[in-house]
Image (tube, rainbow, N blue to C red; front, top):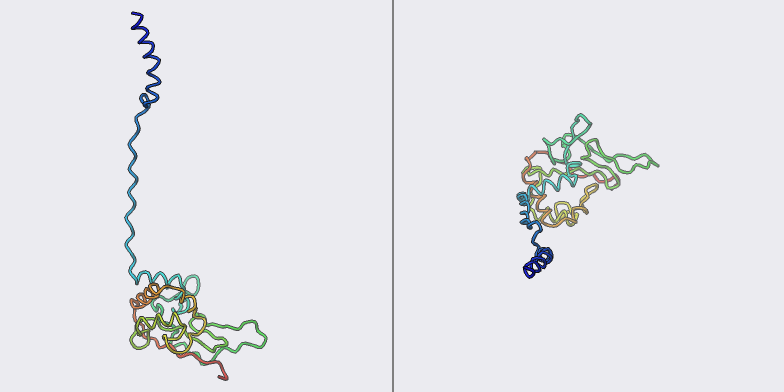
Length: 200
């Protein structure tokens, strides 16, 4: 009887230690929760969709789209998106800055014509109209944006066109812009040639 009591006592003393070591008496570990499945990836943008984003954040409509009056004042007339300076708005000479004036650059109300030391520049028609818009190939568009040469091979692109900024874009981004321009509604609008500064 004593031996039995001794064994029970030893067993009673050892069981808590054994449970602690083995993890017995502890709550059973819970199975790892399955991570929430990731949302499906957004479909990849087409080059033209990417180009629309780039022309929007690049401010192309600021100069290349004529304006109309809206509730808050002038706003881009998206029915004439990127069609350039309107041919019916006639400008024949640069703005004569009064002597001593701190103003050296001037623009008309819809920002499609600019006057400065270079003469007068007009925002180009970037729509794919076959007679008056941009119809030259993609490689010439890339060349113009990278070199600052009008149409990729002629006179310098005039202010305020920030071609130096666009030259920093990758070829893929420039090709995306070109792809977007090809999706525009063709608008017949013959933009005038630049006017050189007087005396030149």
